[in-house]
Image (tube, rainbow, N blue to C red; front, side, top):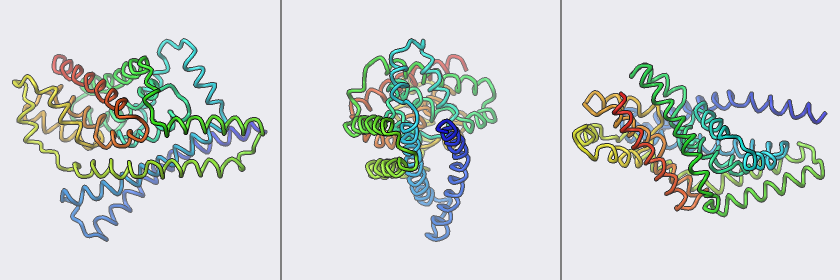
Length: 347
């Protein structure tokens, strides 16, 4: 009987992902109506686009955070997450855990900020930090929308190199960061979440508490997590919205030319303050390349914009200390610069 309940639970959770995607489409239409019809903002203006971006991304991330937090609560209640953590940390898997996490990141259609709820869920569930980093690195960089747009604009060779390098960077980056034993730099809030989650799961297992009795506590914990990170979401998305639509293409095209020795590091440093998903930044990259910016330099800029951003850092602050954020951003920035030079040499 218990096995049947678990199977039904898995099926219902699997059916929930398409429903969530439909909800996002409905949410975008609702926000468009509110922003452009009720508020009367111009959809072609920078300000109107930024306001629309702020409302949509804030609501979307809060919904995703609640859904993922509740989902991880269900998983913790029904599946031996502690055993999984022990298995991943004690068994010799020859790095396959990083490969799986990176590929999982590649098939999830999230931007850097939307990946944070899943990251929090993984950390809360006790998944090793290096494995969660592998997901966090790859998730915003590679997705089906980016691949489709790359194929149309740059051809299959560039698409394969970009997608492959994004996955490899997730695997290698997660592996290296995992070797640093960085768990001590997680925030006290996350450590408390982990401890409470493990204790609650143990009590439920001992008392064989039925799912219907566990559900209120799971939902309450999901809302608690949302309320705790709400201010970080608002600040982070506000920063991203302020920058959304204000990418000075001519400025970057001027200073990212092949003749300038500092073009590659500048491309990465200039990309970090920006915030956009892959679909939003790829047309800008096409403009850069058309204006003479080397393709590798343009791709490095794109990776920095998509994979590293100030809004992402603001959201991560609830999960990590500034030291860990600095280590994460610094490590990935170095990887992106190296890949940028490699792209310029290959492409």
